Image (cartoon, rainbow, N blue to C red; front, top):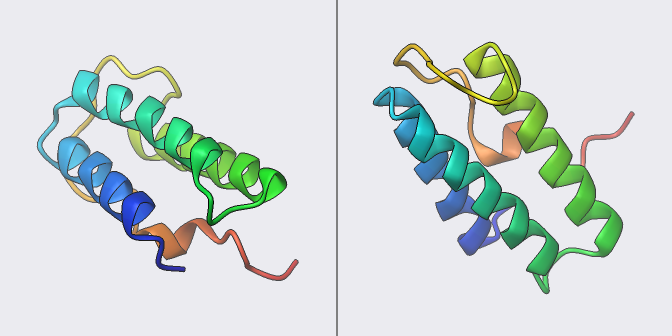
Length: 88
């Protein structure tokens, strides 16, 4: 999956998490969720699923959903790893 705006947003989140900038990462995640909902490239149900998958992965990578601190490193994976179009 390559939607440039969403890809760039996800990469910004990954970079913030890698740098340990957790407040910035949380703000970027909220922005990413808004971008999903506003994307003309996604239908409503896919936008919701992608935003939810991003929030869940973010929580797993940082140890909680609302972040206070996170260790540096890449535990988020790339945008495609969120599996929007993965078959069950």
